[in-house]
Image 1 (cartoon, rainbow, N blue to C red):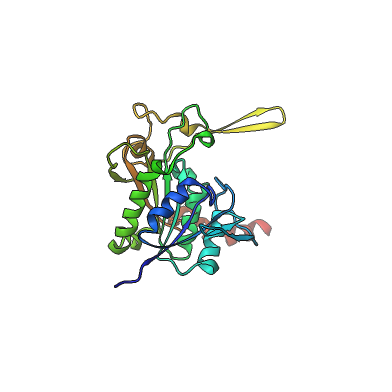
Image 2: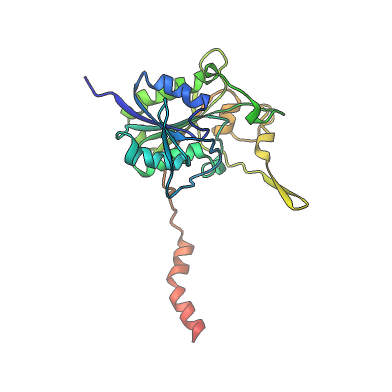
Amino acid sequence: MSDPLEILLTNDDGIDSTGLRALYDVLSEQGNVTVVAPATDQSACGRSMSHEVDVEERDLGYAVYGTPSDCVVAGLAELGPDPDIVVAGCNKGANLGEYVLGRSGTISAAVEAAFFDVPAIATSMYVPAGETPLSQIDLGAEEYAEATRVTSYLIEHALGAGVFEHAAYLNVNVPLPDGEPAPIEITRPSKRYEMDAERNGTRVHLKDRVWERMDPDTLPDPEGTDRRAVVEGRISVSPLTAPHSTNHHETLTALAESYLETVTANDS
């Protein structure tokens, strides 16, 4: 009999979040789950890192007074056994588009794992908020059923299928459950970026306008993107790499080669 899977579970909503608990309950049926999660909500903290953090043992696992990246480093290097996979989530609210990849604490936890050469899955749930702020929307464990089901499926099948030989981590975004399981679409992150700012006296209000255009009938994102898939009711799975790749650039290479000659001539 093969050894049970070792799973490191974290998030950015905090160790007491419903989404983390829902994943813990389901993933515990697949293997040994070690929870190392922030003690408080760390949403949108990106890959912020601390030099030292306090840790408490809770019923569910370790509560770290730090960021998701802190949790992954602490979990992989000290607090847990060597995991077969790191799972971050389930986040309340989607993480869609290229611009959130460096902003989301959920995704940043997966990226941190990738630098340790450990496969990772970041799972988030799209919640159509409308006029109601996401923070005021309460979700029960049953509403994470789609997210926990697909995360469990990917853990069971993706590791053995060699998916992580080509992807460092998977960014998974899931629509709210709607009776029947939703299909999976392999996607790429949307390139849409619509940040805005407005000054009011001594304050500047920053607004993310991307979320204002999430009507399936008028969604501007093309086919194959994560935003379109989720808004139309499909599970978006984006296979991504870390660290980010660099491109060969002939013009920049030429500038580099002429640098010393140019500055020497200018100084003479």
